[in-house]
Length: 193
Image (tube, rainbow, N blue to C red; front, side):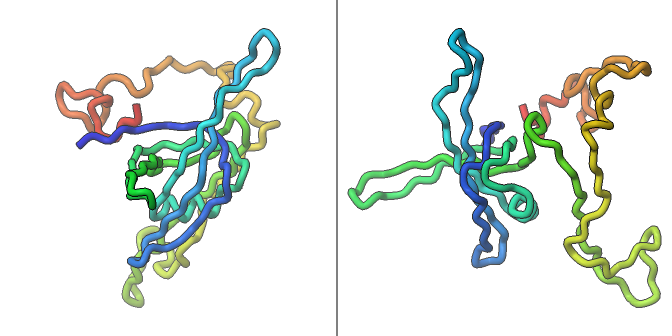
């Protein structure tokens, strides 16, 4: 069975709702509002707004719940799922939602601070060192490797204005490192487009 993947750019239209299932799985939901704007002859025009229910599971749900707020510009990537139910009048109703695989801030509208989440390693017997001398009893939920970019200092980062030039490289084309003979990156199940 193939997954229909979709990427939608928009704004969080309603505050993120967070809960746990009966089995303990983390899930969060929010509504994404998306519309297209363009400059016409009479000024800026906007298309009708589309609304998408978005559902996130597991670690993504936890991180989305701790990161997003109503009104934030985000990019959501995931697959479409259609739910159906019988309404009070006996008719069948359908609702499509995006089961998110990735959610992030829209950097066209925001500057981001990124924190890498580290899982708690399994506890080891007393006296046994962990790799690199790190503690085996590190608290779950520690964020490490914080990276912040100051826009004033980042003027030449990633814009091609640096004196030092690199050879252009194809991105997402050709044979990937994990592809077999005759397979391209586009043949992979994880390819987003």
